[in-house]
Image (tube, rainbow, N blue to C red; front, side):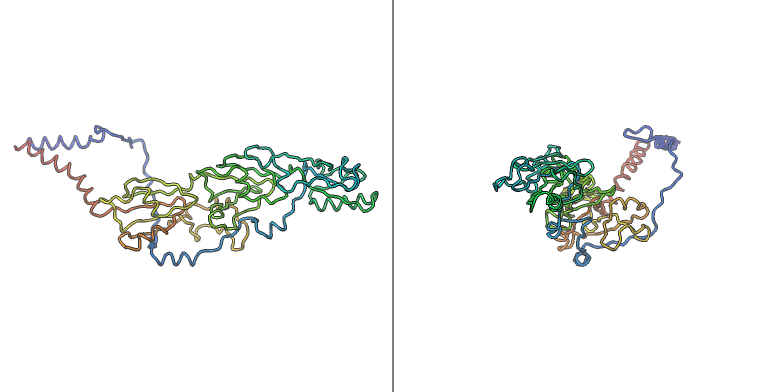
Amino acid sequence: MTIRKLSAGLLLMSLGACSLAPGPYLDRSRLDQTVEPTYASEKYPVKPIDIAYFAEERAAVQPSRCPLTCLTKAERDNYAYRVGINDQLTVIVWDHPELTGGGGGGGSTPPPLPQGNAGNSAALTPGSGSITSSVGVEGGLVVRVANNGTIFFPRVGRVKVVGLTAQEIQQLLTQRISKSIRDPQLDVRVSGFNSQVIQMTGNVRSPAAESITDLPLSVVDAINRAGGAQPDADLQNVGITRDGKRYLVDVAALLETGDPQQNVILKDGDIVDVPDRSNSRVFVLGEVVKPTSLPMNRGKLSLADALTGASGLDVKTGDPRFIYVVRGAINPALAPVTQPTAPAPVPVAAKANVKDSALVPLVYRLDMTQVDAIMLMTRFELQPRDVVYVQVASSARFNRFLDQLTPTIQTIFFTKELVNP
């Protein structure tokens, strides 16, 4: 009878153990858990990380494609700055000082005019935030492009110049002034670049507005003008917003490999944002010494780096034969095709329409018991938001079960000893 009473007491105590035991506890009586989670029933193939995988990867590598217009030698040679509103022009009419403020007369040679960025030093100063600059040249007449796109020049009157290059303006003024001056010789240069501006934001040292000059402004030039990128900047995913659409540019690939297909030429109104590395992380979970999330360095992180960052495998519980890399991918059977086959610009915003059901995991497995796997893990490059998971060994799972069962067995044993000493 005593044993039965004692057993009943232990049973009642075990039922109320959750309310009496210390530690965090969530009252589930106020939670509606009638809806059970659903999971996909299909099985996902596991790709081994071996020599065959790298052979297939090399065969599947596609050449990079410029998302917009990139700076090449041909683009640089064909580039021409077109004058806009508020730009300033310097005009010299040789041998007619009355037209150019007293210079250029008597065959004297005026000082050289500014070329390219030399005429826009304010825009090149990191952190100045200034987008207005003008350099008056001694002996030249400096005129500003009015809001209606015209300039006033003596003996010519109002001339519409907006949208023209300096050479085209020179030809136009020469044609107009030739009615009053025989064989005029003109020189026209842009001395103040104020009409075309891009915005530089994000993780750069001096975010500011930057002017576009008569030299093509690429995304790398814009970052350098802003003082360079911060140490935690993610140069692999630099965004360029144009006409309400955001495009991704891999500046890291440009700096490391010199890939010209990533050096985009910027246009008026572009917004360049350099994000941080918060979205370029890799998660290391499972049987490692220190489960953690690791930032990628310029978009690069190998599987060996990830395991080293987590202090390696737990030698007591980890199974080195089953190291998984789980990567999210788009299922083409469920997701709409957002990237055309033709080399046309594809904005990043188009990916926002992809439904979550279209995401399927790609699973890779590494067997560290093989001698070549130790070498291959240093060459397996991870991607942002990959999950590295180290499987628990079967013996460790059995030992954990025994750890949970042992206190119950000990309680029953000591209870019996107290009843029947």
